[in-house]
Image (tube, rainbow, N blue to C red; front, side, top):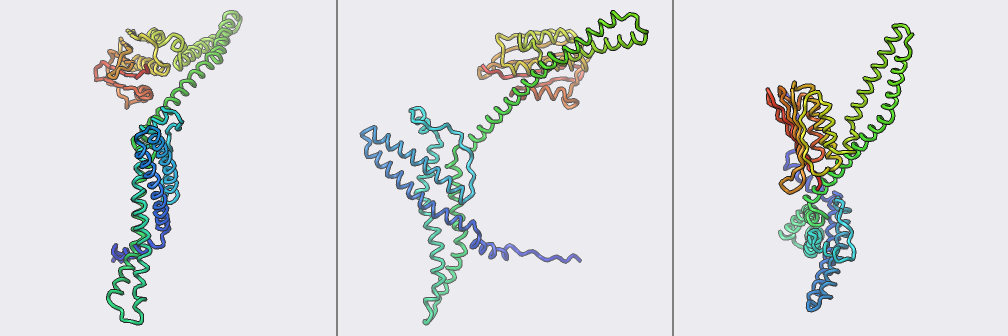
Length: 424
């Protein structure tokens, strides 16, 4: 038989939970929060009300209302700093970093402050706090002071008959004392909720937009750094290892042509070394060209793709319709997508012909859009999940916020399309 100790029923735990609020540190922080909020909110409300009345009284002039508005905005900014600090210290609220530009004493800057929704959200909190802060503080203080007074009611009846009224006051005082922590914490949580909605520098949607912008900047920086690193590797290989391999191949060729009196085994070894060095040099040139071709940097996408089409093992019909060059990173992505697509076509598709079309057009919003299209007459059935090559093409396109589409039914043809947004 399974004998287990039954857990305490919820209604049995309730008295302990209620009583625990009396010695919970959060209760006393909440009480301090409400008391200080009542003071700050009341003083802030009085200051804002006085300035508003002064501006309204001088409405016949332009100077007094303008000065009153400026004073109200300065007061609101100062109260915002105080209130946010109070909420952070007593309620543990963490405020997001405010990326708003600094305010200067220029008409444009001041007009921007007046037109910013953030300014009026914060101002509305101080107006609300002028009433709610005092109200919440009075409720909390009343609960904590009236409860002990009610509990002391039987003491006043000592020496006389204790009536039902005295015991009712005692019971009511106990209930109020037990409820006081939760009243206090509830009011402070309500104040914190209002503050989270109004005192933030930006709304949740604006924070997400700023996050997206930061991620886009970070992504662009990463892409630029990777592109610069590819160019550096290409330059180092071209100027270093490629030149030394060229010199080695030439020396081996000279030795092969001049040293005719060597034994047959030595001649064969020298010939093999010469041919191997030339093959390695060819492979290295292809590698360097694939990293970042110099012709792409110097003459643009049209010339670079013409060289790719000329080197292709299968005939490639190339059409490039661009009235201007696009950004360097867009050119690099377009080059690598088309180059890799043609390489895959030659190796895996069994195609006899391929066609490449590059057009600089306009999108629906009037911005420039570079459209790529690679078509082959191979067997089809290309699947991005079967290898990393096609997935890599899609990842490259998406790295610049582009759109990638692959259509490859069994039997062909295979069509790769990409759209790359370009800055105007």
